[in-house]
Image (cartoon, rainbow, N blue to C red; front, side, top):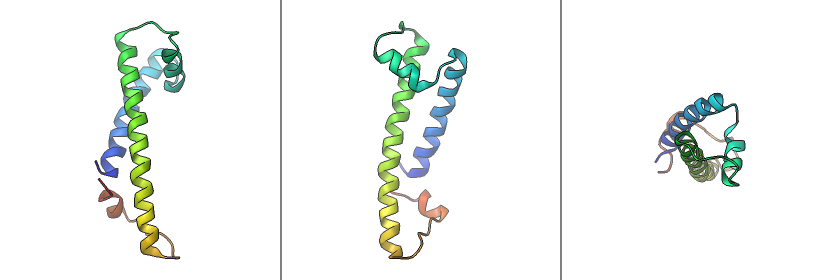
Length: 95
């Protein structure tokens, strides 16, 4: 996946998480903690919520890996100058 695809995926996942957060009045990080320690009952929504949250954690980790690699490449190219963070360079980022 490219950086652009990962970012789009994260935004889509966040939209699903926001729906569940609004429905249950709980932020995803807090929900996930309660779910992991077994304080919440099993339900279809909760199982989906865990899946979305874990997918977001995974995509965010992958984003960081690719972005740091991309920034290292830009630093190598720029030497001591300012980084050229052109839109096309991010879209074509490492896959």
